[in-house]
Image (tube, rainbow, N blue to C red; front, side, top):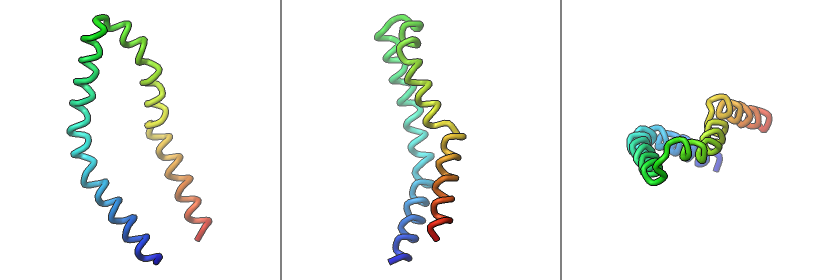
Length: 83
């Protein structure tokens, strides 16, 4: 049972590595288009920036490289202590 879990984790990791460039290629233009639509709808860039600044700060906090590294280190240390 332990081998199946290991192979599943490696398989999902490999799948994530293979699919991540595709997701980025499609997500970046989509996000830019949504942003332009919002700015066009609002009409004033400062108003839109003021409305979405808190969202940007939260996303920068959650997706920051330091935050990701901290979670990765915590996960690895939990695995090391469990073994």
